[in-house]
Length: 224
Ligand code: SF4
Ligand code: SF4
Ligand code: SF4
Image (tube, rainbow, N blue to C red; front, top):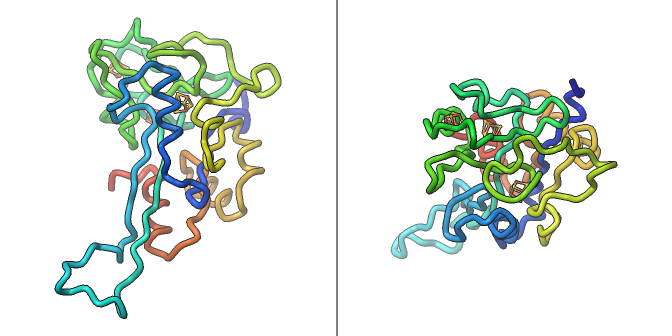
């Protein structure tokens, strides 16, 4: 079994994300997903906690907090503990020993949706065919295509996932944990390791409320 350090993870820097959705469009095109669907990679836009739009009558430009839009790009995190794998009754989901990528074998899936409920991020997507699919780190094209694919490593397979290579701002990266940690700031690396989080996220260089928002969106407490 490969060391955890060799398992692939995502890295996300909200300071570089411009909210353009190029990543999610790129994913949809490569995998033949519905362009309107909330799907394998999504970009959501959040406002800081103090940035509620006040009604016009209450608005005071001298005292109002600045409203800031924080885009967050999320997909399956290929969790080290993979709760989706644990609940799947047919063992359709595999956390691959070789590279840590979590795949769904649609030949085994019965569409019970347990994985979708267990996933802290709601990453598995229920398809028109009645089966689940999700990000497969671009092992191949189409739903279920990652199951059984050769293991991914940077030497033999240096091609980056589509969302990574098409990210305009360089906000998303993917690779073995030991490589992604080198990309991260000390604060991001410390948080990833100490909180057992599932994606390496840079601290947001905004105010405290925005920082909390990004951390929560990227942590296993995202649904709290
Ligand atoms: S993010 Fe969700 S779907 Fe992906 S490995 Fe974790 S639990 Fe499974
Ligand atoms: S929907 Fe499919 S992959 Fe998900 S838990 Fe049920 S059988 Fe497993
Ligand atoms: S790695 Fe591939 S499948 Fe996963 S979100 Fe990015 S483009 Fe989509």
